[in-house]
Length: 171
Image (cartoon, rainbow, N blue to C red; front, side, top):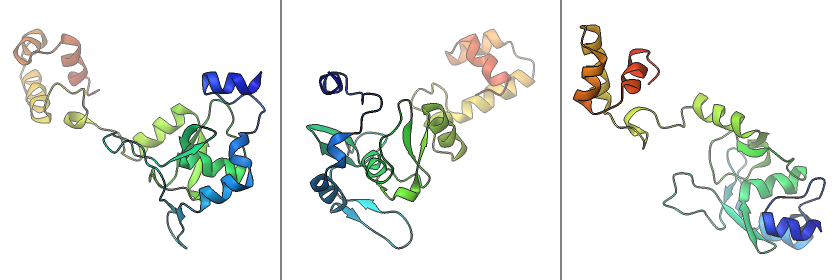
């Protein structure tokens, strides 16, 4: 029942401990891959996520699947992660597994934390951006000078909605 559902979906069954991480040999194997520090982060020395990924985290294999090393550290220290929550970093270091640098949060709280700490790509650094920062400033100046939003949208090859967002200072 529960075990097969966990294997099939990758979701931890409600009220079930993450069994593989709670066993003694797994604990020893996990903590042997950590470089501890008296002050600062405890660095994960084991497996790492794809280096080309925009987010880099430590990974730990247990029960024939990979979990985030920070998630494993939380489980070993505090127990299972409740459904709907993520293990987040106070220190913003994806390789840190120091328990007091970790906290639980919803995906929304994690996103707000990233925005608050300036970890999200804004402006032309955002991969979905179509305009350079200098173009946005030029559009803003031309709007202030009385140019038509429709004409500016055509001129810069963007939608009228994009021009509206620039005028409303939403982007």
